[in-house]
Image (tube, rainbow, N blue to C red; front, side, top):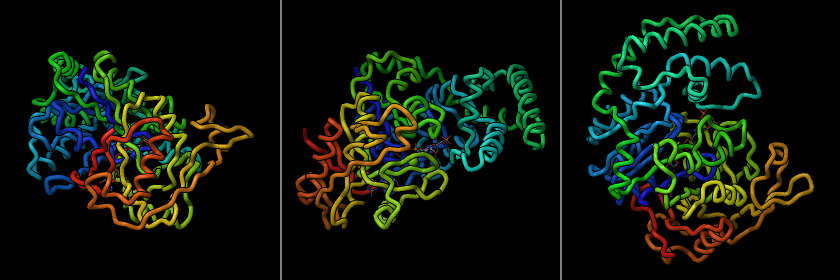
Length: 425
Ligand code: GDP
Ligand code: IMO
Ligand code: MG
């Protein structure tokens, strides 16, 4: 059963790109299964720095087939620009495969998101403004346009005319904006389609054949468990399903193929955009994490909110995803704190929780229950084995492992591929 899911356990930006690149060495196929170019996955390897938004993070390995699966919403202009950038950096993208069924982000999705976020005012979600929510909404409303539609011009025009008519009514009558003309869109998207033609494929069949031939398939999640549309901190979530169960649904194969679920967990927590964040450090500690961890969004450049490690979030992520192991990232960023704080539970409205409470009201009122562990001063960037780490850092790793009830298999001590410590069970 050779499928591995790799996903974020917090609110995104845990270091999934680096982890996937590290794990991909032993894989045959790497698949992006949800989200769109709201994601920004950073890889530093082979003398290159890559910021990937849609292309799966196994792209640096020539032996890997990279797949964008059905559950992803694709802005074709962004995908083509990313492919051009990669090709310019000497990366071979000819093997990239894009599902016929993936939904497309259209110009009106970007426009709709701009006006609806503005309309929400102080209640805005702080989205990445990449049209993700509107594209997924159209998919659920069955008025979305898919990659395959671009290869039948008559159908494409017909679908576009219907949906654009409605969007233009909303844009002009509700939001007082200008209508978006159809012609530019048709020509642009037909041009994108021509360029993407060699990459478009029946990816569900491709994955099924790979799995039944016992080739190793890695499914790469974007965002994180707490941004999951169902299980995250709704409404401050994304519009897709990052949790592991969806990887099989998006890939189009049965869940029994998945036998390994790797949760990427940052040694502290960050969040971009609005929404509750119980362990947020709105003081010098948070600033220090942000500076040492270079916590600025890969996609939007926004400053990420920073806070101490959140045990209840990890426990919930372990339960929601069936995590079999953890990759603990950015441990190096915590060097230099006299003590490191860990939230081991929440106190909310007179109740104690060791995982995320079920209601939004309870979560909004959650006060962390802290434990404080001794810190360390040493720089960790050159450590290559667990024993190279100061004993306080090792103790921190073991503490988090126990807190989540999931073994740590890799510890990250810097952004580069080789700054990864494999941990024996
Ligand atoms: P993703 O969205 O989960 O792939 O994460 P991002 O790439 O958006 O953000 C993670 C950032 O941390 C990137 O700049 C990575 O290069 C960097 N990074 C990943 N792992 C480590 C690590 O172990 N230590 C340090 N210092 N940086 C890391
Ligand atoms: P990666 O894959 C961090 C956040 C946005 C916002 C909310 C909804 O790099 O970890 P959306 O544009 O998806 O409708 O925004 O989700 N968000 C992310 N935060 N990392 C991401 O991706 C994110 N993708 C979306 O900031 O709060
Ligand atoms: Mg990111």
